[in-house]
Image 1: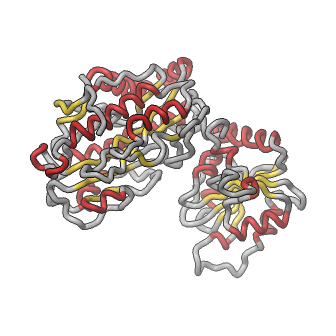
Image 2: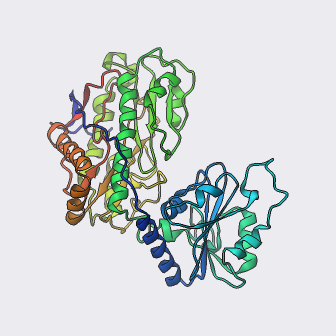
Length: 462
């Protein structure tokens, strides 16, 4: 069992940091600049063209570059050097694809549509690829949503994570290589660094997403169904980074479950998570008001488990920063949590973007350094096999250097005011002192109750 630190449960008044009404916009010029950087990267890597795949679950790369993400259907962005970009998609999306901020041309392929829609007049997909500019012998970069290591797949660069029929059509045109790393590599991927306006957009969404989780915790009552508790999230309607999660009892140990009609019992285990694109907030614990309602074998849950976990999270917040290697953060967290008592699951942090987990430089031995203009998720999930149920403190931050902070504050003063207030709360009320470049985006940053029916008590060093 870890040694208890200085943190303990204390009365903490969680401030009202406010919620914004208007979401920051991404200018068309920003999308056009992104596409230009992508084309420069293609040329530098020796590609003649690229095909970027997207569907509802895997829309981040195409959405980042064009402002379009397909609904119900698949889509391909065809980018050929020296030609205008073309989006091929189905009948329900072809109109949306034609009005992207990037200004791409859109072509209809009914095969991307849902089954049963009219396909009798469909043009063969290879013909559409040719119309979009692909030519025999082109060296094609295939962009899906993953790339692989040689210990996973021997010829990793040839492992294309596109549907087999698309991969086969591309291979008939020319040599195909997995080029997903152009977007998603944590060192030099195009999405590893984020413009100020996109970070401001993520702050807007993180504020609203964390308020959803806050409403659940402060509104939680025994006798509610999980559905009724989840209804407190009151989503805006903006696209999510993952499905809303809420589960209780033994099902809560799996973490990923959607709510059900199960009635929430006093004393039961509980977990919930909610995230818009660019964000995620999660919390977990027992549905109790005091230590007396905890299982007999876990009466010291707050001090022995939650407070020690929170100490690790506080160290995470105080360590993360520009120039820090992912390996250092990983080592510090594993020294505290990667043991038989906590059983750390997954990496203790990762880059977050339109997709909830873009990549992670935070892994054992990583020499990859964190940089300005990155969005990062604290994501340390204990999976204990002992008497204790888990706890969780997932939220997002951004890193910005002095120049970036000045620009953010000037362009988005209301968001900057919330960030400054969160930093002050973390320092003065919780005892977490983050570096100047660390910008907490969540209204719950650093805040962790142990007894979910008594959220007025939270862990603090102060």
